[in-house]
Structures are given as structure tokens and as C-alpha cells.
Image (cartoon, rainbow, N blue to C red; front, side):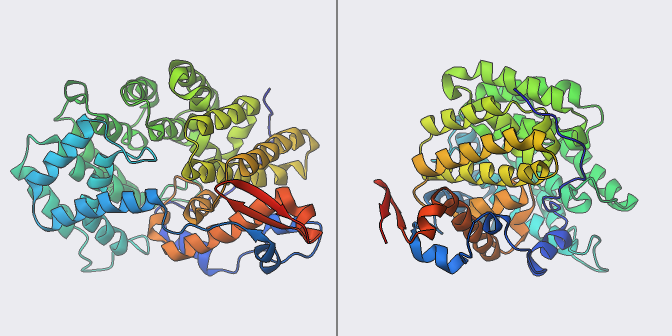
Amino acid sequence: MSFRLFKSPQLKQGSPLQLKAIARKFLLPRPASTAQTTMSGPMSLEDIQSRLLIPVNHDTDDQVENSSYRDRGLFMARQDRWEELADDIRGHDQNHASTQTGMPIADLMIFGARSDAVRAAEHALLHGKPEKGAPLLQGVEALENILADHPDDYAIALIVAHMHIDIGWAWRGSDLSEDVPLHNFEAFEAHFQRASEILDEFCAYETCSPALLAARSALVPGTRNASNRLADEFETLIDIDTTNPRHMRALGNYLLPRWQGSFTQLDLEARRTAARTQSMWGAGAYTWVWFDALLVDPAGFGTLEISYFIEGVYDILDRRDDQHHANLMAAHLFRSWQIIRKLADHNTAHQPLAVALRHGFDHVVQNHLREIHPLLWGHAELGFTNGSRVVSVDRLAKMGQEIAIKAIALPFIKGLQAGETIRFDHNGITHLPS
């Protein structure tokens, strides 16, 4: 079944790469947590923490592993070891090598290699336009020169193309509810056009390169009338790299109405992808395709088949039953529930959807979650496809930890209020009487 939501004002999830908007989210006083107001009793965060005993992992294995590959890409770029770096990227790409949580190692090294140039540009654009004399183009020119020295190396091309894509977003921002100055939009289009020119020199199908296919798909927001070929390109990418859910998540995001798609098309592609990948993910691909899109544009809940989505969550956790995925699913379900319950407060037709999300959240917490990964909860609060990498990681983690603790207390709130202590560990959950 599906639920149609009334049209409501856009719920902002933060403005990706528009740094002032994201900064305001952290610098202005935060309203009282909706999770706290659902508790029937004056339990403060301190009260909850004293009785909800759950490990908090600030340095998760996936964070450490991801950082090591990003740092390696950055180090080799700074040392001008471009041939060695390119060899590593191609090797990881051709072997579809990924981290424990499914992040492509080639993408991580490409990110690290371009990060100096991108950070410099983002800093220069902190206030929407560069100050006079800001070193906006120094890093761009340096990497373009490296590409000129290695014109036939698709790994170097990927570094430079992704640099242009990132800087394009820095000029434009991603929140379509805000006006984009003409000059900024022209800069966005120019950087995306340059990235397209670079990638056009290489055939992703001949090289069987997931990284090249993914990079071409990332050009869609800067390409007019691209929705017709989007599904076909992503179908190829997903079919050759089925274990990587990030391709499915990107497909759903790019099929949103803001990027020339529609919710009907998004739902159709989610079903088609789930059918093709059933042996790998069960119903999980349906969930992955909708995953980021729902938090970027909550109007999509009106088209989503909630029972299929929740089934997909369970299938994903059956196949990836680790704490990274448990936190990812719990944080998403909680954030989705918070969005929908606000609508349900005004229209009882939305209550079944809120109930289903809350039930799914409770199931994940009680059957899968055993520790908190704060950054995942912080990213969920802003929407996963956001520019929060430019926000203080410490602030993001602090916010995520507070949200997670209040959220995870909800399935146990009656016992906590009665004086019980709830203890999580790798063996399960223990209820200790008062």
C-alpha cells in the first residue's frame, strides 16, 4: 500500500555546499528535540544516559578504513606520485575493491587526491562568491596540468573531473528552494561542462570501470534533458557493481523531480532494480533506491510503498548485519518517522505510515543495534546527500550522539521511567530492574 501526502512546505535538510546555511544549523540554538517531547515524563538527556547503557563508537572500523584510503590518495598527490596513485586507483577500480561497508576504495583515493584543490575552492566560496585575490583557481590549474601530462590515464581524469564537479556544487549549492545568482549558476555549468569534456575522452564500457560510469552519472544534475538516459546508465553501473549500494542511492536521488525526474519514475526504477538484484539484496534494492531521496524530498513518502521499503530494510540487515548498517537503517527510519509524524499531527491519514516507520525503527533497535555510530545519526539529521563534510565533524558527531540516545530510549521508555537500566552489548539487550 502507499500513502498520498498533502502538499506541504519543503522541509529543509540543510543546504549542501552552501556553507552559511549549514553553519546556521549549528550556530543557532536548536529547538527542543521532538524525540524528547514524545516521552511521557520529564526525562532529561542526563537521566536517559544514566540508565541507557550503550557503547558509543566514535572511531568505527569503517571510518578508520575510509580515512586511511583518503589519506593515502592525499599523501600521494602531495608527493607528486601520480603514476603510482593512478595505478592504485585503476587496480582497485578494475577489481571492484571496497571497504568492509561497501565503499569503493578507488573512490576514496580519488577523493583524497583532489581534496586540497576542492577545499581551497570551497573556502574561497565560503560566502557565496570569492573575495578579491582568493586563490580559487590555483588548485584547479595544478590538477589540469597533471592531466595534460597524463592525457590517456582515466584514473587521473577521474580526479580532475570530480574536482570540477565538486567545485561546481560549491558555486551552485543544492537547495533548489534558494535562488542561485546567475554568475554562480554559470560557474556551476562551466565546471560540469569541463568535467563532461574530460570524461568524454574515455569509454567506461571498454574499460569496464565502475568509477567512470559513476562519474558520468554524477554529471546528470548539470545536464539538460538527461533523465531519458539516466536509468539506462545506472542500470549498467548497478549490474556490474551490484554489491555497492551507493549506486542505487545515487540513482534515486537523481530521479527526484528537482533533477528532471519524478516520484513515479523513481518508484518504477526502485522496483526494477529490486527485481534485477533480488538474489543479492532481496527487497533491499527498493530501499536503497529510495533511501537518500526520501530525506532530500519527503514528498516522496506519498509514492513510497512503505511495507516494501521496510521489508527491504530487514533484507539489507539480514545480508549486512553489522553495526554500520544497523546504525544507518535506524537513523534513517527515525528521521523518516520524525518527518511523517509531524504531518500526521495535522492529518490522521498519515498515521499508518508513521506507525509503520516507528515499528520498523523499534525492530532495528531491538534486534540489530548494539552500539551508536554518532556521525551516521548526524548525517541522517541533515539528509545523507548533504555537504556536511564542511561542518565541524565534532559538532556533527555530538549532535548525532544526542539524537541517537534519545531515539534509542523510545522503545524502552516505560521501563526507563520506572527505574530500569537498559544495557546493550554484543550479546544483546539486558533489562536490569531498579
